[in-house]
Every structure is written in C-alpha cells, then in structure tokens.
Length: 137
Image (cartoon, rainbow, N blue to C red; front, side, top):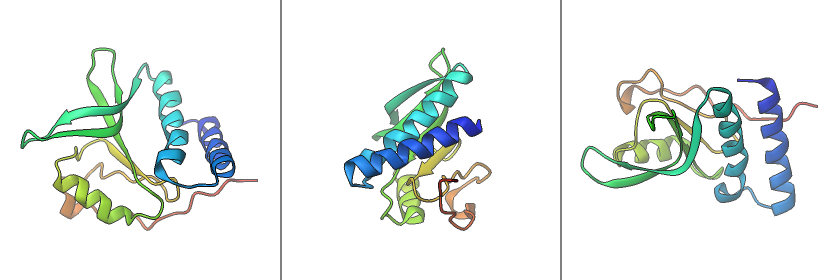
C-alpha cells in the first residue's frame, strides 16, 4: 500500500479526532474507510459500506465494508471496532456470529489493523502484539 495513502489516513484520523473531540468508531472509522477506497481505486475495486452477507446458518449480517470487483465479487472485508473495545474479544465474537474468516481486516484506529489471513479457524489465529499507530513528524 502506498505510503501516501497511509500518511493521508493518519492525517485524516488526527483531523477527525481534533474536530470531533471523540475517538468513537462511528466517527474515526471514516478515515480508514477513505484509505480502503483510495487503495481500492488503484486496484479497480469498489468499496461498499455496510455490505450485507448471509452466514452459513442463514443469519443476516453486515460487515462495515467490502472491496468488490466490477463483477460484484468481494475481494475482502473490513470491520471497525471502538478503540476502547477488547479487539481480540470482538474478533472472536464476530467469528462466532459467522463473519468471514478469510480476507477480513479488523481495525480500531489505535492498533495496527489485524487480519487472520493464514488462519483456518479462529483458534489458530494468534495476532502479533498490538502496535500503536503514531503519526510521523
């Protein structure tokens, strides 16, 4: 991913926090959404927010976003969480509800986004220790 996109994301995240006075998911997730949209355009992908899915048990869910090919085939999924949430517990809860386990990124706009890319099941997903996202000066 382009360093320019990452720099823009961090600047927008900082701006949103300053202007809103909040770090709530519903506010700051817009910065990561913009990052996904920008990168997706370079790959001829379209970002669709609140993308609806049916789980294996036929439950209706919606991921916060999906990147789709022009033939409406999803390449990957995104789920945002609040910075105050226990990200590992939230990931486990989403997987229990039937959220996709492949090509999904979980973000809280504080720690490095996590993806269980090589895991076959949640029990084998062992994320790296959290890294703090800090803006370079």
